[in-house]
Image (cartoon, rainbow, N blue to C red; front, top):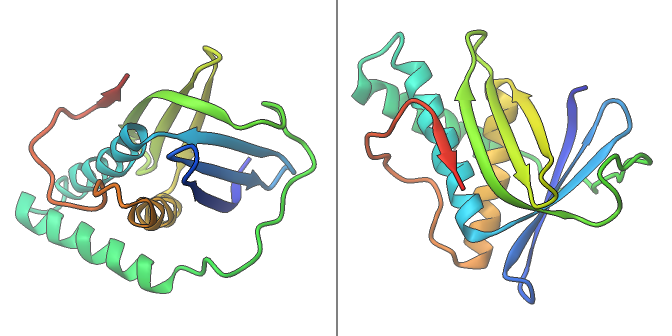
Length: 165
């Protein structure tokens, strides 16, 4: 299963982000993201990207390279295509609230993201760097629309694994 398309919308009445994606296998997953979860996703993904780059660059250079790569993706990303809902919804029609997440770098250069749901289930994603950057660009735009102030920023030193509950 690979992700075909991301979609998101800030819902002011809920003060949450509705985040959806569809897959190459015709499935759609939809989630509610709170400000705290969106902040964890953005900052956790940034941290993992920098740590991966630090394997081949000095820390300051890795941070600059990551920032440059994210800016390049943001300039090239096309969020104008209409979202195409998928016919199969394995988690049901209604979006599920994300209440925790775990983000880990993988040996193959991808990033594993576990979205922990209010239903006690989890959805596990394994994203290549470019797909992760597109997702983060969309989430950053959504937090800007919401006025949350939790977007891309300089990272403090953190653990190699990001956990948020």
